[in-house]
Image 1 (cartoon, rainbow, N blue to C red):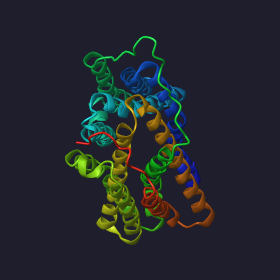
Image 2: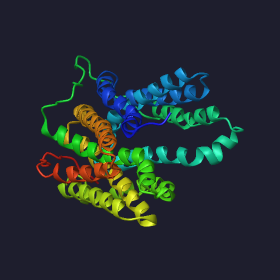
Image 3: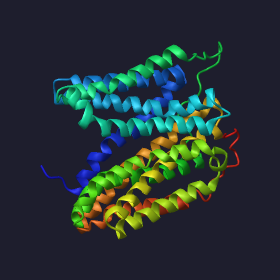
Image 4: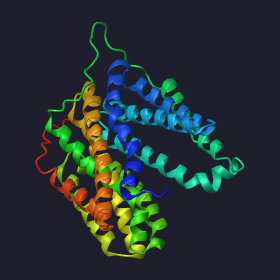
Length: 353
Protein backbone atom coordinates (compact mmCIF):
# COMPACT_ATOMS: atom_id res chain seq x y z
CA UNK A 1 0.00 0.00 0.00
CA UNK A 2 1.55 3.35 -1.04
CA UNK A 3 2.01 5.89 1.74
CA UNK A 4 1.65 9.64 1.49
CA UNK A 5 4.44 11.78 2.94
CA UNK A 6 2.56 12.49 6.17
CA UNK A 7 2.24 8.73 6.70
CA UNK A 8 5.96 8.29 5.95
CA UNK A 9 6.78 10.88 8.62
CA UNK A 10 4.46 9.16 11.09
CA UNK A 11 5.86 5.70 10.35
CA UNK A 12 9.44 6.81 10.97
CA UNK A 13 8.32 8.87 13.95
CA UNK A 14 6.45 6.21 15.93
CA UNK A 15 9.60 4.71 17.54
CA UNK A 16 10.68 8.27 18.36
CA UNK A 17 7.30 8.97 19.96
CA UNK A 18 7.79 5.86 22.09
CA UNK A 19 11.10 7.27 23.34
CA UNK A 20 9.48 10.62 24.09
CA UNK A 21 6.78 9.01 26.23
CA UNK A 22 8.96 6.56 28.17
CA UNK A 23 12.22 8.38 28.92
CA UNK A 24 10.80 9.85 32.14
CA UNK A 25 10.01 6.27 33.21
CA UNK A 26 13.75 5.65 32.92
CA UNK A 27 14.35 8.55 35.29
CA UNK A 28 11.94 6.96 37.78
CA UNK A 29 13.77 3.62 37.61
CA UNK A 30 17.13 5.32 38.14
CA UNK A 31 15.82 7.06 41.25
CA UNK A 32 14.68 3.71 42.68
CA UNK A 33 17.29 1.23 41.39
CA UNK A 34 20.31 3.40 40.74
CA UNK A 35 21.80 4.24 37.34
CA UNK A 36 23.94 1.09 37.14
CA UNK A 37 21.07 -1.34 37.75
CA UNK A 38 18.77 0.68 35.48
CA UNK A 39 21.34 0.45 32.67
CA UNK A 40 21.70 -3.31 33.17
CA UNK A 41 17.90 -3.68 33.03
CA UNK A 42 17.79 -1.52 29.89
CA UNK A 43 20.37 -3.70 28.16
CA UNK A 44 18.51 -6.88 29.13
CA UNK A 45 15.28 -5.45 27.69
CA UNK A 46 16.99 -4.45 24.44
CA UNK A 47 18.79 -7.78 24.13
CA UNK A 48 15.84 -9.99 25.07
CA UNK A 49 13.46 -7.98 22.93
CA UNK A 50 15.80 -8.22 19.96
CA UNK A 51 16.23 -11.97 20.35
CA UNK A 52 12.51 -12.64 20.71
CA UNK A 53 11.76 -10.25 17.85
CA UNK A 54 13.86 -12.43 15.60
CA UNK A 55 12.69 -15.76 16.95
CA UNK A 56 9.03 -14.86 17.46
CA UNK A 57 6.60 -16.59 15.11
CA UNK A 58 4.18 -13.76 14.44
CA UNK A 59 3.77 -10.12 13.49
CA UNK A 60 2.28 -9.23 16.92
CA UNK A 61 5.43 -10.66 18.54
CA UNK A 62 7.59 -8.54 16.22
CA UNK A 63 5.80 -5.33 17.21
CA UNK A 64 5.58 -6.23 20.91
CA UNK A 65 9.28 -6.99 21.18
CA UNK A 66 10.17 -3.86 19.22
CA UNK A 67 8.21 -1.97 21.88
CA UNK A 68 10.21 -3.71 24.60
CA UNK A 69 13.45 -2.71 22.88
CA UNK A 70 12.27 0.90 22.67
CA UNK A 71 11.56 0.97 26.39
CA UNK A 72 15.06 -0.38 27.02
CA UNK A 73 16.63 2.39 24.92
CA UNK A 74 14.51 4.99 26.75
CA UNK A 75 15.82 3.74 30.11
CA UNK A 76 19.43 3.67 28.89
CA UNK A 77 19.51 7.29 27.75
CA UNK A 78 19.22 8.95 31.19
CA UNK A 79 21.28 6.15 32.76
CA UNK A 80 24.45 6.78 30.79
CA UNK A 81 24.98 10.49 31.62
CA UNK A 82 24.23 9.63 35.26
CA UNK A 83 26.98 7.01 35.23
CA UNK A 84 29.36 9.49 33.60
CA UNK A 85 28.76 11.83 36.55
CA UNK A 86 29.38 8.99 39.03
CA UNK A 87 32.27 7.15 37.38
CA UNK A 88 34.11 9.83 35.39
CA UNK A 89 33.32 13.28 36.84
CA UNK A 90 36.72 14.58 35.71
CA UNK A 91 36.53 12.99 32.26
CA UNK A 92 33.05 13.97 31.14
CA UNK A 93 34.06 14.75 27.56
CA UNK A 94 35.91 11.49 26.98
CA UNK A 95 33.24 9.38 28.71
CA UNK A 96 30.41 11.04 26.78
CA UNK A 97 32.26 10.57 23.50
CA UNK A 98 32.81 6.90 24.38
CA UNK A 99 29.17 6.00 25.03
CA UNK A 100 27.95 8.23 22.17
CA UNK A 101 30.35 6.45 19.82
CA UNK A 102 28.90 3.19 21.09
CA UNK A 103 25.42 4.35 20.08
CA UNK A 104 26.65 5.34 16.63
CA UNK A 105 28.70 2.20 15.97
CA UNK A 106 25.82 0.05 17.23
CA UNK A 107 23.52 1.83 14.82
CA UNK A 108 25.87 1.62 11.83
CA UNK A 109 27.46 -1.84 12.00
CA UNK A 110 24.26 -3.95 12.04
CA UNK A 111 22.86 -1.97 9.12
CA UNK A 112 26.07 -2.47 7.16
CA UNK A 113 26.76 -6.11 8.02
CA UNK A 114 23.36 -7.81 8.35
CA UNK A 115 22.53 -8.35 4.67
CA UNK A 116 25.95 -9.19 3.22
CA UNK A 117 27.27 -11.28 6.12
CA UNK A 118 24.95 -12.16 9.01
CA UNK A 119 21.93 -13.25 6.96
CA UNK A 120 24.20 -15.46 4.85
CA UNK A 121 25.82 -16.86 7.97
CA UNK A 122 22.40 -18.17 9.06
CA UNK A 123 21.41 -19.53 5.67
CA UNK A 124 19.21 -16.61 4.69
CA UNK A 125 17.24 -16.51 7.95
CA UNK A 126 16.32 -12.94 8.85
CA UNK A 127 14.90 -14.13 12.17
CA UNK A 128 18.22 -15.63 13.25
CA UNK A 129 20.10 -12.57 11.98
CA UNK A 130 17.97 -10.26 14.14
CA UNK A 131 18.48 -12.50 17.16
CA UNK A 132 22.25 -12.59 16.52
CA UNK A 133 22.61 -8.86 17.27
CA UNK A 134 21.22 -9.42 20.77
CA UNK A 135 24.36 -11.35 21.74
CA UNK A 136 26.65 -8.30 22.20
CA UNK A 137 23.86 -6.44 24.02
CA UNK A 138 23.29 -9.21 26.55
CA UNK A 139 27.05 -9.69 26.92
CA UNK A 140 27.37 -6.01 27.78
CA UNK A 141 24.63 -6.34 30.39
CA UNK A 142 26.52 -9.24 31.96
CA UNK A 143 29.74 -7.22 32.02
CA UNK A 144 28.01 -4.25 33.65
CA UNK A 145 26.59 -6.51 36.37
CA UNK A 146 29.82 -8.45 36.93
CA UNK A 147 32.49 -5.75 36.69
CA UNK A 148 30.96 -2.56 38.09
CA UNK A 149 30.14 -1.80 41.73
CA UNK A 150 26.71 -0.98 43.07
CA UNK A 151 26.58 2.22 45.11
CA UNK A 152 23.87 1.73 47.70
CA UNK A 153 22.03 4.68 49.25
CA UNK A 154 22.83 5.39 52.85
CA UNK A 155 20.24 4.13 55.33
CA UNK A 156 17.42 6.58 55.86
CA UNK A 157 18.25 8.66 52.77
CA UNK A 158 15.15 9.05 50.57
CA UNK A 159 15.34 8.20 46.86
CA UNK A 160 16.40 11.11 44.65
CA UNK A 161 13.73 13.01 42.77
CA UNK A 162 12.88 11.74 39.31
CA UNK A 163 10.34 14.11 37.73
CA UNK A 164 12.12 16.63 35.44
CA UNK A 165 12.03 20.32 36.34
CA UNK A 166 9.99 21.62 33.41
CA UNK A 167 10.32 25.18 34.71
CA UNK A 168 14.06 25.21 34.09
CA UNK A 169 14.94 27.17 30.96
CA UNK A 170 18.06 25.11 30.29
CA UNK A 171 15.99 21.92 30.04
CA UNK A 172 13.92 23.43 27.24
CA UNK A 173 16.85 25.08 25.49
CA UNK A 174 18.94 21.91 25.39
CA UNK A 175 15.90 19.76 24.57
CA UNK A 176 14.78 21.95 21.66
CA UNK A 177 18.33 22.28 20.35
CA UNK A 178 18.77 18.51 20.35
CA UNK A 179 15.24 18.13 19.01
CA UNK A 180 16.20 20.27 16.02
CA UNK A 181 19.22 18.06 15.36
CA UNK A 182 17.11 14.91 15.67
CA UNK A 183 14.40 16.35 13.41
CA UNK A 184 17.05 17.09 10.78
CA UNK A 185 18.58 13.63 11.01
CA UNK A 186 15.37 11.58 11.20
CA UNK A 187 13.70 13.87 8.66
CA UNK A 188 16.45 13.22 6.15
CA UNK A 189 16.37 9.49 6.83
CA UNK A 190 12.63 9.33 6.24
CA UNK A 191 12.12 11.75 3.33
CA UNK A 192 15.43 11.65 1.44
CA UNK A 193 14.54 8.73 -0.90
CA UNK A 194 11.17 10.20 -1.90
CA UNK A 195 12.67 13.68 -2.26
CA UNK A 196 15.47 12.51 -4.57
CA UNK A 197 12.99 10.55 -6.68
CA UNK A 198 10.72 13.62 -6.88
CA UNK A 199 13.59 15.78 -8.16
CA UNK A 200 14.72 13.01 -10.57
CA UNK A 201 17.97 12.13 -8.82
CA UNK A 202 17.29 8.55 -7.64
CA UNK A 203 20.89 7.54 -8.33
CA UNK A 204 21.97 9.63 -5.29
CA UNK A 205 19.77 7.83 -2.75
CA UNK A 206 22.12 5.04 -1.64
CA UNK A 207 25.25 7.20 -1.33
CA UNK A 208 23.37 10.04 0.42
CA UNK A 209 21.87 7.70 3.04
CA UNK A 210 25.22 5.97 3.53
CA UNK A 211 27.09 9.24 4.17
CA UNK A 212 24.25 10.62 6.31
CA UNK A 213 24.85 7.77 8.74
CA UNK A 214 28.55 7.07 8.25
CA UNK A 215 29.76 10.63 8.81
CA UNK A 216 28.26 10.63 12.30
CA UNK A 217 31.25 8.64 13.55
CA UNK A 218 33.99 11.34 13.31
CA UNK A 219 32.01 13.66 15.61
CA UNK A 220 32.84 11.59 18.69
CA UNK A 221 36.54 11.58 17.83
CA UNK A 222 36.66 15.39 17.77
CA UNK A 223 34.97 15.75 21.14
CA UNK A 224 37.15 13.04 22.67
CA UNK A 225 40.29 14.76 21.35
CA UNK A 226 39.63 18.32 22.53
CA UNK A 227 36.73 18.29 25.03
CA UNK A 228 38.00 21.32 26.95
CA UNK A 229 37.78 23.51 23.87
CA UNK A 230 34.24 22.40 23.00
CA UNK A 231 32.08 21.28 25.92
CA UNK A 232 30.32 23.82 28.08
CA UNK A 233 30.85 26.63 25.57
CA UNK A 234 28.21 28.43 23.52
CA UNK A 235 30.00 28.71 20.19
CA UNK A 236 29.97 24.96 19.34
CA UNK A 237 26.18 24.93 19.71
CA UNK A 238 25.76 27.90 17.38
CA UNK A 239 28.32 26.55 14.89
CA UNK A 240 26.49 23.19 14.77
CA UNK A 241 23.24 24.95 13.90
CA UNK A 242 24.92 27.01 11.16
CA UNK A 243 26.53 23.87 9.76
CA UNK A 244 23.18 22.03 9.69
CA UNK A 245 21.39 24.86 7.87
CA UNK A 246 24.24 25.39 5.39
CA UNK A 247 24.48 21.68 4.61
CA UNK A 248 20.72 21.47 4.05
CA UNK A 249 20.82 24.43 1.64
CA UNK A 250 23.75 22.81 -0.19
CA UNK A 251 21.87 19.52 -0.39
CA UNK A 252 18.96 21.23 -2.16
CA UNK A 253 21.23 23.12 -4.55
CA UNK A 254 23.78 20.45 -5.50
CA UNK A 255 23.68 17.06 -7.19
CA UNK A 256 25.70 13.88 -7.37
CA UNK A 257 28.60 13.33 -4.98
CA UNK A 258 28.45 16.90 -3.63
CA UNK A 259 24.81 16.46 -2.69
CA UNK A 260 25.57 13.18 -0.91
CA UNK A 261 28.42 14.82 1.02
CA UNK A 262 26.02 17.59 2.10
CA UNK A 263 23.69 14.91 3.50
CA UNK A 264 26.68 13.43 5.33
CA UNK A 265 27.45 16.81 6.89
CA UNK A 266 23.89 16.90 8.27
CA UNK A 267 24.52 13.51 9.88
CA UNK A 268 27.84 14.72 11.31
CA UNK A 269 26.19 17.82 12.78
CA UNK A 270 23.36 15.77 14.31
CA UNK A 271 25.84 13.44 16.03
CA UNK A 272 27.92 16.40 17.22
CA UNK A 273 24.78 18.01 18.69
CA UNK A 274 23.88 14.73 20.42
CA UNK A 275 27.24 14.64 22.19
CA UNK A 276 27.27 18.35 22.99
CA UNK A 277 23.93 18.09 24.75
CA UNK A 278 24.34 14.75 26.55
CA UNK A 279 27.61 15.98 28.04
CA UNK A 280 25.80 18.89 29.68
CA UNK A 281 23.80 17.12 32.45
CA UNK A 282 26.94 15.71 34.14
CA UNK A 283 28.53 19.16 33.86
CA UNK A 284 25.56 21.19 35.05
CA UNK A 285 23.69 19.07 37.57
CA UNK A 286 24.61 17.41 40.84
CA UNK A 287 25.37 13.70 40.39
CA UNK A 288 22.02 12.69 41.95
CA UNK A 289 20.10 14.98 39.64
CA UNK A 290 21.65 14.14 36.27
CA UNK A 291 18.93 11.62 35.35
CA UNK A 292 16.17 14.21 35.85
CA UNK A 293 17.81 16.78 33.61
CA UNK A 294 18.65 14.16 30.97
CA UNK A 295 15.09 12.78 30.99
CA UNK A 296 13.62 16.25 30.54
CA UNK A 297 15.99 17.07 27.68
CA UNK A 298 15.41 13.80 25.84
CA UNK A 299 11.63 13.95 26.27
CA UNK A 300 11.57 17.36 24.58
CA UNK A 301 14.08 16.15 21.99
CA UNK A 302 12.05 13.16 20.88
CA UNK A 303 8.73 15.00 20.97
CA UNK A 304 10.22 17.59 18.62
CA UNK A 305 11.79 14.93 16.42
CA UNK A 306 8.40 13.21 16.10
CA UNK A 307 6.31 16.30 15.36
CA UNK A 308 8.63 18.08 12.91
CA UNK A 309 8.82 15.36 10.20
CA UNK A 310 5.07 14.76 10.60
CA UNK A 311 4.45 18.46 9.91
CA UNK A 312 6.87 18.47 6.97
CA UNK A 313 5.11 15.47 5.44
CA UNK A 314 1.71 17.13 5.87
CA UNK A 315 3.00 20.29 4.14
CA UNK A 316 4.42 18.20 1.28
CA UNK A 317 1.06 16.46 0.83
CA UNK A 318 -0.88 19.72 0.99
CA UNK A 319 1.35 21.71 -1.38
CA UNK A 320 2.81 18.99 -3.58
CA UNK A 321 6.23 20.58 -3.06
CA UNK A 322 9.03 18.10 -2.42
CA UNK A 323 11.12 20.99 -1.12
CA UNK A 324 9.20 20.71 2.17
CA UNK A 325 11.44 17.78 3.09
CA UNK A 326 14.78 19.56 2.94
CA UNK A 327 13.31 22.88 4.10
CA UNK A 328 12.55 21.06 7.37
CA UNK A 329 16.30 20.59 7.83
CA UNK A 330 17.04 24.23 6.95
CA UNK A 331 14.51 25.43 9.53
CA UNK A 332 15.89 22.97 12.11
CA UNK A 333 19.40 24.32 11.52
CA UNK A 334 18.26 27.93 11.90
CA UNK A 335 16.46 27.07 15.15
CA UNK A 336 19.59 25.32 16.42
CA UNK A 337 21.57 28.48 15.64
CA UNK A 338 19.24 30.77 17.61
CA UNK A 339 18.31 28.61 20.62
CA UNK A 340 21.77 28.60 22.27
CA UNK A 341 22.21 32.38 22.21
CA UNK A 342 20.42 33.05 25.55
CA UNK A 343 21.69 29.86 27.25
CA UNK A 344 23.39 30.38 30.59
CA UNK A 345 26.38 28.09 30.78
CA UNK A 346 28.04 29.61 33.82
CA UNK A 347 26.81 26.77 36.02
CA UNK A 348 29.01 24.24 34.24
CA UNK A 349 31.08 23.09 37.17
CA UNK A 350 33.10 20.00 36.35
CA UNK A 351 36.25 19.50 34.33
CA UNK A 352 35.61 18.43 30.74
CA UNK A 353 38.92 16.79 29.95
